[in-house]
Image 1 (cartoon, helix red, strand yellow):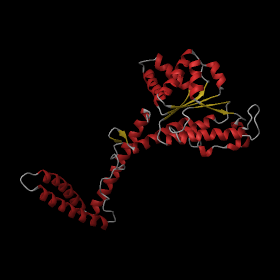
Image 2 (tube, rainbow, N blue to C red):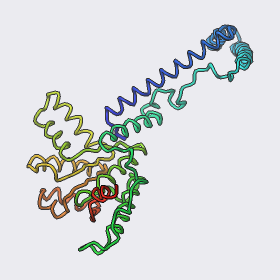
Image 3 (tube, rainbow, N blue to C red):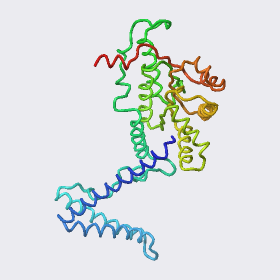
Length: 334
């Protein structure tokens, strides 16, 4: 799972902040306990001393190390019992002053060897959702909030089915794609239809669910994506060029890329080349992509080079959106 470097950096900062705040809380509690029962401070110093003595006893030469360790361990246990009694007397559990990391798996380091720990992955997920929310208003956009009643049950001209029946199928595919991400038979989606039919809403639902399940998700519009590819090529070693290089890496390497509003960009030879690189690279590496567009697949074929059209037709599952503009319907119901 290739989380964006900025997401990972903010997650690490939050992990460090939470660790520091926990240590500060523990230190305040320790000082308050020492003030209420001064004997506790003496016991803690002796306990730390016996732990060091335990190691020394094990390494001691000449004496019987087994007997030495036994004596040190017995002393430590007696000190621990006295400490537990004193803590209970002031209303604290016996482990109240022990240093306890929030994550026992990694000790709040965020990593178990070379593997990202669950605690850091959860922080990355929260940071990623916060980033996505800046673009998608994820507070309202979820599968549970999707409304099928906006879609007519009357058969739509030229389609042979109603917008409601069609959207039930579209909704089921999107829901399964998101909840079973990486395991669902369909790897890539192409959402096509005129504006105002729910393509962006369902794209946001997919982004939210996949992100909450711990995968790296990048959402962006086609115009912004191609602008970054252009800056990467023509600005090269400038600051903007280096930032664009990082952005294009995100597009190429994230677990799920959601490319919104394909066809709204000015189509040039360069944008066609960038789109081909994006689609082909992600297909070759086995990474999933969702594309939404106002273009039909026939319009895609007329607008883009055959290499792009072939990959979209052969590797993407097309979901058709049709019916009345939902935005207008919602406005009229207010």
